[in-house]
Length: 307
Figure (cartoon, rainbow, N blue to C red):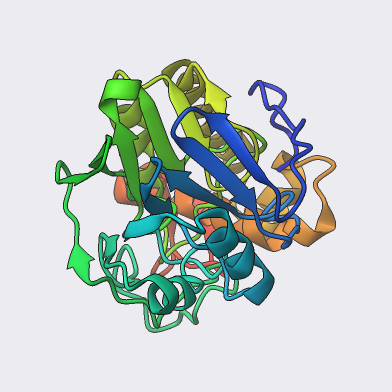
């Protein structure tokens, strides 16, 4: 998104779709050819280990990508398929890989919202949810998935989705962070599927861990991951301050706030920006700082609570 000059983004990512890159010993990645304003150059699938391997995030239901992943592990045994979250650019490819390999699927659970949907709400067009996904093995925070020469610890990171899970390799100080942290852009937090309160708590959780090299669902790896997370935390706090600054001038609806805050934004991202503003407003309403008539929804009008 625009207006992120405070975050040291890296948009240099020349990896071509279908190519297999060993980014570190024991970690390979393959790019799916699904570029967009939301996916950057495309979704990444990771292969962990050698010989007996795990696949992290099979990607969308894309036959060419599935073939590239299966070709990359030819002669090896896929023992685990691991999914960070249930968005259509990450999990639908699971069925094809499972059918080809027989490997069990590990994830936090099926797609769900972060909170009950209000009566006036429709499904968020930004959610991109994969509502058909079901894991074979449900993974909780702190669970360990072990294979031949590798070990992944589940790190609950709700916020982008309610079921988002990162997978840390503590001995290597690596963390596969899905879409919770990305090196090229901020993550979309779109209620009711996403939650800003959860997202911020998950950033704090990652910042307190020792892993310092992050592998994301899109874009380049992130060195000094916990330091980068501090930039994201500061950025979100500044975004909240911008919302409060606009409301100090009088009540406003979300499109008005987006125009005031996201200067120069790609028009294709306006809707997503609105949902990120809504995520902040939900938190502010819950804290009693901001008020609205009825439930805090995308079409609402918001005002500061007199102190």
